[in-house]
Length: 219
Image (cartoon, rainbow, N blue to C red; front, side):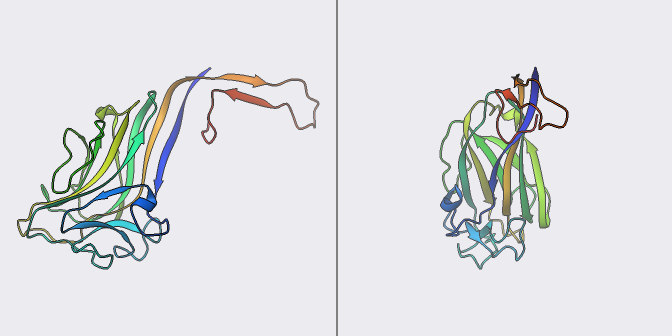
């Protein structure tokens, strides 16, 4: 029989020892100011305790703020691979922070060209997956569908980008990110039931299997 199964790539929080992006599977590319850091400065009780990733004006964990006097763009990113039969691909993450509509805030990109982002530049030829519209004084779960970006069956860079325009307008706190994951369904998988056999009432039953299935997915 055929079926559809839902699965997820859980990137988790930023809580591995070392308080670095590398220790948590990410690469960071920062501007000279308004830098992504990992630490506890954005919240005493984040969704995934104790750390989040957040913008710091001077790159120190204790300074959860940003400089709005000059333009800056900073990124953190990782490589992701999705199966060809993935659909209903949804990016989910927790976001705290204010935005100046049209400029200062968080953007997320998917780049199947695998071009590493550069500080103070937006990703080139990457698809825009998320654009921050709302002011979030506390952590709010964000979800955005990515099917239109045609990332199924591809390896791509998932890029979280802080952008501010330097017009002296906009106030903090800046972006703080936690608990990111990609959730998707697998379409038209073919399965065969195996095993079975005779059993008596009161016994433990007969074992069966499902060929082509994956551990950790409910069918």
